[in-house]
Length: 259
Image (cartoon, rainbow, N blue to C red; front, side):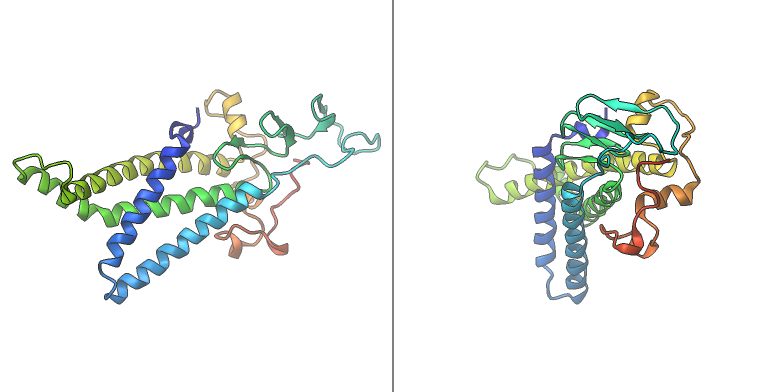
């Protein structure tokens, strides 16, 4: 089971909005400080990058088998080919049929319900960047809510009587407490999830291949070294690694068909 699947989508969205709004409330209280304004600008730039990576991951075609690939008798590829009875195409190595998308996907990693798309050869970079930006956002939120959380804990130990339910201060304390604890949980899960995918990318493996081996350590036959493994995902231009875009000079090494 993928770690991210443990978090229902509606809860994750609530946590993200809750924490994001709390952080903005915290910042707006100190807008007279230029350092806070600079921090707010940086925070929203990262949030914009997160949205960019999300839409790129969601809308980019992960890769499809070229028309009539494998039907030509003169092909140099002599390996045994798999045939998909659903799509009526020959499947290259590492290509799998996704029942959710009802199509074959090149170098398929997994189908992600959060983006309603498969993660494959052409959008795996965007997916990894999405995880990175989400993690930066939630860690930033934890750091800047830590003092608020500390004040809530101190207030809780010093308060001798349970306030009335309509008490505004009490509701605010509960809001901070819930937001901080839920954000910490998301931080822990997302850190483990990103670490898992970075390990797969570094060793030129996919989630499907890892599941086929039942999570046991194995040496990938497609491993061509750490540097080249990352170039197959993030492209040939290191200046574009941090951006969810390839451009002409930054396309991934290879084509997702021949390995």
